[in-house]
Structure formats: C-alpha cells, structure tokens
Image 1 (cartoon, rainbow, N blue to C red):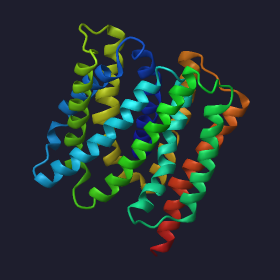
Image 2 (spheres, rainbow, N blue to C red):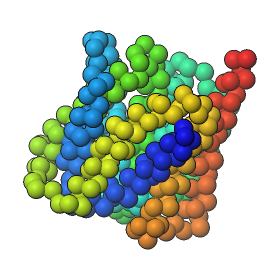
Image 3 (cartoon, rainbow, N blue to C red):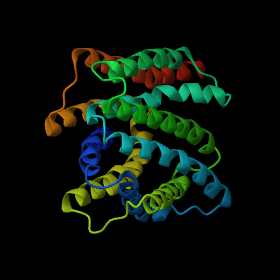
Image 4 (cartoon, rainbow, N blue to C red):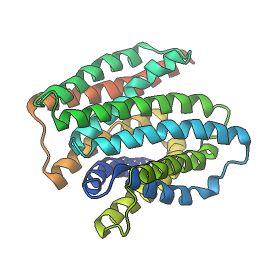
Length: 283
C-alpha cells in the first residue's frame, strides 16, 4: 500500500506540470499560486505550528518554496511540461552542493550526480532552441526554480532536525500564499471569476498535489523506507514527460532525450546511491 501511495503521489506531481502549463495560459503565475496555496493552507490547518521557532523556520523555508514554485509556474508559460519536469528534477542533484556549503558531508554519489545531471540540463536547454528565444527563457526560469528548490531541501534537512516536518507544513504553505497574493496584487493579476478549467487545475494542485500529497508522503516513507521512496520519487520527471506527450502532444529531440536520461541518471546517483553509501558508512 505504501509503494502504491508513493507511485500515486509521484504520478500526480508529474501530471501537475501539464495542468499548470494549461492554466497559466489563462491566469498569471502569481494569482494561480495564490489560489493554489490558499487551498493547500486550509487543508494544512491541522498542522498549525505551536512554537515560535517553528514559525521562524517555516517563514524562511516558505520564501524558498515560493521562489521555486513561482519560477516553475512562470517558466511553464514558455517551455514544455516535459522539459520543466526534467529540469525541476535537477533540484535533487543540486542539494549536495548547498548541503556542502552548509557544512554537511557530500559523498561521491552526490558529486557524480551533479556532474551527470548538469550535462543533461545543458543538453535539454540548448539542443534545438534559439539562444535568446522564449523557450530558452522558460528553461532559464526553470533552472532558477531548481536552484530555489535545492536550497529549500537543504535548509529543510537542517530545520527538520529541530522541528518536526509536519509542524513546518502550514507555515510554509501560508507564506507561499501570502507572497503570491502580494505579487498578484502588485502586478494586477487578481481576476475573478476563474474558469472551470483553471479551477480543476487549482483543486488538483492545491489539495491533492500539495497538502494531501505531503500527508501521504510522510505516512508512506516510514513504511516503504528511504531508498525505495527516493527511487519512486525520482520517477516524477518520467511521469511529467509521459503526461506531456499524452495530453499535450509534446516531444523531445533525440539529443534532448539523451539529456533527459542524463538528468534521471544524476537524480538516481544523488538520491539513491548516495543514501546507500550513507547507510553503509553508519553501520
């Protein structure tokens, strides 16, 4: 049951790239995120932080989480769902870099993953694109998204040692909501009513892919184990590519497919092999 739950969460996360790309053609990225994370915050209310230290940690984490989602959502206006999923997955590989800057030990699997996935992202972004074209701009925004998510994950690993991860959930989601709402107001993106198509995207991304997905992830990881969880979550770009092909008719060139394979290889090296090496060191 835990394995199936993790596969379901990963598939939904892959599907969201298609949903968001479809929605941001109609509404601005700030406004989409504001409504999405308002819904997510409501469903995360049971995890209201009770300590001031949890609020402080959640506020900082929320800033990087907001940056990651904003750059990803904005980038999806210009790039494909397939490429967005693969480049976003680059965040897993960048975590060792920022973890090292925070004083943590990084093993050979982490550094090998960085090299492999960086080459893959370069192929994805450069192959078949005009250097200054809109698709390249979307890829650049998605690289910023990956950097933001990597910083978020590295900081979360540090703060989760002092605070329970669940205690940080509501605070993070509410910070993303507030920053998105401020951006929507500042850039005139607030609009009403919202079409039925966008509402479907908001409900799926806000409730199932945000709040409920994190509940399921916390429950399933304890039962499936860290290594199996990492392997399954590494399939998110694969699901993004599949849904991009199935629902949007997107395709990648042979060189971009090779780049995608390098990114996936880097993700597996950084998240699975590195964990295995860490486990052997601790025996």
